[in-house]
Image (tube, rainbow, N blue to C red; front, side):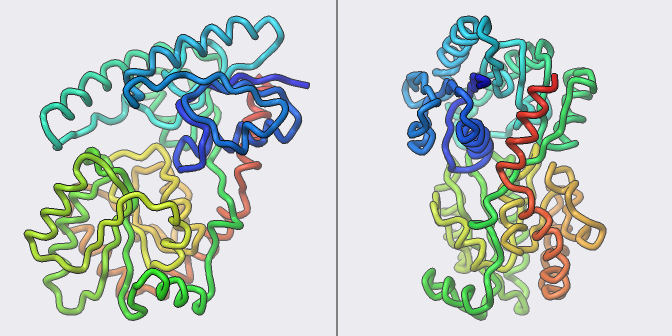
Length: 377
């Protein structure tokens, strides 16, 4: 039996890097491996395995920033204690300083956040960024093996942190095809009825945190205002996500008299929302990968996304018109949404092959690849 020590903030299924870390831990546990988890939270499914041991780290003030030194310290103490027994240690970015395997989901050196929601929020963002930059550089330069989630992330580590290419190994995220999949027209109509959405409107979805401007909602909001001036535009924008700027955008929408936009906040039924929608838009300024876009594609949804996002490298030639060249360009986004509206059937038909391809690569496939990378280096 092999043993692994995994260190990250949370092993839960809520999305992003947490979902990926959960998938790796779950796969290793099902193989009968001894798995040690250092984190603030671990999903109950993982705790049910006899070979999983949870080493809980207190979350001070419900803050990842304040708790990061504790996570680093406990991870290092356990790694030092278990290393003599041949345990392989996998950490995420700069969250724990250990010279073994590092799995990079986000490169702090590749993007500087733009916080708009108050001076305190801006100050916190500035302080945390400096801490994360220093920890990231130290951890990645000392790591023996680095797993990256895209070619985009790989190139960022080479360009921004001078990481040798031979240390970098790309493994794409997986999916749960039994949850994220296309539905029939009848099933879609039933979902819309449950959600109270009109069958005649074109439902456009945005998914992302509204704590800063990284996800590009400000660009989408401005483009939406322009689109709504056109009598031929029949779109209805559904916004999924929370953050410090959520009240700001709600007020701006109300002040502008935009009625065809609905802020849903956090939702646990994202797969159903995607299956009931017509299109997803993600004009992100930085995205190491883009799991939300990946999930939308798996549901058969055409997804407009920034060309610089990691997930964009998966798009075939026939879907290149869905890639946004400049996340700041409102005119471009308006034009791409209008083109999508005009050629909806074309994009829906052409996204089906990519959707099928993505659904054929599961979270278990991803975890298996990572385990092989670890054990072969």
